[in-house]
Structures are given as structure tokens and as C-alpha cells.
Length: 318
Image (cartoon, rainbow, N blue to C red; front, side, top):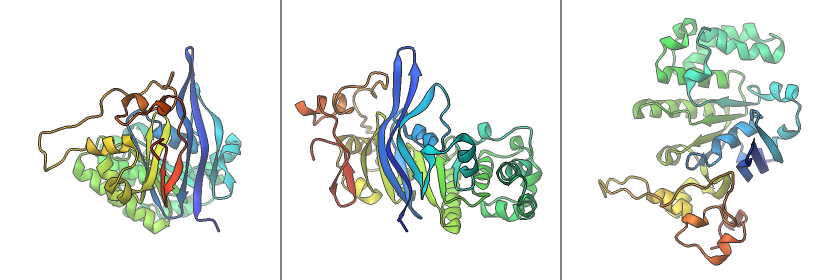
């Protein structure tokens, strides 16, 4: 049995506009191992959320997947019909969305929203069994049984996010994709939500793909991390190695920009602005902002290659 539960190979997602295609994801390749926690991190607009939605086959017009392969175990997600992928979602791979209030139906009670997903998968078979274990399901994410009879507006932000996690794990998926699950939550609730996500992942023996921009959160939660910039992966490796010795100039500057307790009041940003995905720069997409730029960087796109055991970097320096 392969150690990889999810593989993404040369994924490309473009959004069509009158001015031309916006290359939101442009050749992303990575693998998620069984039981692993993998993080996708980068600036806003780097393509990390689009990658997650493409894996779930949830890209809507004017966006579309123009190339690449996505496999969940032996199942080619990228080749499935809409009806086939609908049966795989939630049952085999689930999404915990960003912004729980926008994801929950405001006029349905929590119980009905959890059961709604099961009804769509097996023509109602197993619905009664799940209904009987709903209190246990809520207990798994730290919620009391009475929450089942409440509406979303009666819950706090953290409780709504826990409900989204409960919906995501209701059919015991193999892979959980969490798209910035702690956005708009205070730091105390963020910690509780991530502890909940970690606990349910261990209980299900599932794999987690965590999407976000909070480097501190990634450092505490994931096993490996992939750094995205301009729709491409620029570095992949174990989280401790990347924080201890970042190799790509963008990763180095990204980590250097984190606030430090030893240098209070001193903030170091990354000069310049993110690239236009409508007309990205030639060669390495980071070269206009890179302090180590060479002549080759503006000509050739560096491939993502393994420069050390388990360390993958897309840079002409290596």
C-alpha cells in the first residue's frame, strides 16, 4: 500500500477574464501522506485556497482546472464526473471551510445540517444510525447535545467552526482539508479549534491539509509545510527544517517578517508587491522582489526539485 493518500501533480487552475487568463494555480505538485498534517502557506492571492478547492473539484466559472492530476488513493479525482465526485466528497475527502457563518444555512437547525450531507450520499441509508450518534459526534468536537436544536446565529464563532468540523467528519473521511479554519477568531478560540481538529484527526486516523497564512499556527500544528508564491510552490519540507533553515529567498523573508519578542517594535516586511497573476513576470515569479536575483532568474522558471532529503526548492540558487 502506498504511503501517499493524496497526490497533486502539475495542477493548473485559471480564471478566464476579458484581459486573458488569471493563472491562480500554475503547476503545483505535492503529496499528502497517510496520517500526516501538511500545511499550505503563503501571502493572500498565492493560490493556496484555490488549490484546496480544486482538489475538492469546487472551482466554479469563470475558473476551471486546465491541467494536472489529482488522486485520492487509487481514485483519480480529476477524472471523475460531477456525479461521481459528489459521492466522494464528505465520504472520502471533506472540507472545513473558511468563515463558518457563511457556510452554515441560517434557517436550518444544526441537526438537520449535519444529516443533510448523509442524505445526499446514500439515499438516506445510514441516516437513522447517524442521528442516534449525533450527540457523540458533537461531543467529539467539544459541543453539548443541546446545540443540535439551535440555529447558527445562536452560536458563537468558535461553536460555529466546531459545527463545521463535525459536518466534515460526519462520514469519517480519509482526508480533511481545512481552509483557514481559525480566521476571524480570537487567539484563545484559535487554539481550541486547532486542538479539536488535531484530536478528531487522530481519532479518525485521517490526513489533514491545512491552508492558511499564519506561520505560527503552521509551526505548532503541521508536520510538513509547502510555501506558495504567485500560484506556485517554491519550497516544501518538514516544518522544523523550514523554520530552522529556510532555503528559498521568499521563505527566508517570510519567516524574517514574523514579529519577534526579542526585537519589540521592529517590523521587517518584504519589499515590493505580489505579482499580477494575469501577467506574471517571466522566469522565477519571485525575482522582481528577490534580494539574491541573478540574470537567469528572469529567463528560466526554476523547477521544484529535491535539493536535500525531504527538502524541495524551486530556486536557481540550488
